[in-house]
Length: 485
Image (cartoon, rainbow, N blue to C red; front, side, top):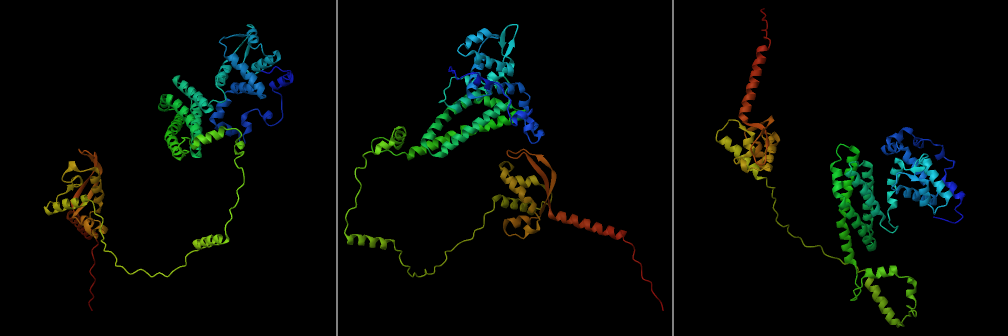
């Protein structure tokens, strides 16, 4: 606290809000800052803030003014919030802040009363902290931690956010806003660590590795709580999305351990050892970074300038001619074309078709050779002679071949494919499936393989019946009249 006379009522006057000029003093609601007033209601976060005007009003009064006044108010407020008494008599407050000037303490207490951080009870002649003050004190709790400015700020912030999320989860009051803040912090740390790895600086990489180890330790301790939040977020859309994003950020951050290890191993391979002294280039660089007055190291290093040695003229001429001859390109020379050579013998090999196609051809041919013109089920053809040994891939391949039976374009093909298309069988699929007892196939489409001749006979019979029916219904042809002359 300052005790010099410059800290007068003129400085304390800044603690009271004075009317000013500009847009901010002429706006009553936050929606007037938007081009479209209806757009302010589209943001859930802004809508939530407008529902808590007591908090924003208290924070505005606490942090209004220059840095010295803000520090004074925050210090007094945290000291009052740390007291374990429900009532704070004015005499007790005067004893707590006896080192402050009376006008400074009175100005701060008046500001707290105006913004609702303190409530004066005239009957008890004491102050009390309302519920709004307790919430503001919880927000400012990280400022009361005994950490120096040289500590890891990212680690402290991550620990505070993890503490809020884990504690809220234990109480069953975790909210999507807290999870989003933690997700954003993890994403920022991942970006900073990735930049450190890509920089190629050994010192920056090792410093980032220390911060990463501290962050990974914190995340590992809170992993069970984070897993519980992700698994219990069903039903709450905002919380579920925030928990899913936090889980992805956590996985990406923990997966960077291997990247740090590879980068450090590459640094170790690039390190140079100076002779047999055991001193490496890293040690030299670290010493140069910590050594003061580096310009003094070159004092006396250069005692005299270098001078040219005397050379004979013919030696200079010989060296110059040799250099010109070496750099002069060789002239192009005529080269004869290579002699003709016989082309090596080659062979054209067709791609071997799967064995299942040949087996299916043999099975269908055997049915026809045996004179078995009765219909067979598609399952008999797909499963083969040994259904228990048939694999899923073989059954699926055979099922894909069935539409080729009787295909006009496939019948003219040579080889096994054309032979299969020319088989005297036709497939008739059904729109039903049958459950079979097979180790790899549970459901199989039903269908029937019928002889092609049976389908032809059925078609011819249908055509003849149609022709007879047409003849019966046709009108009788009249005989031409004969003329007698």
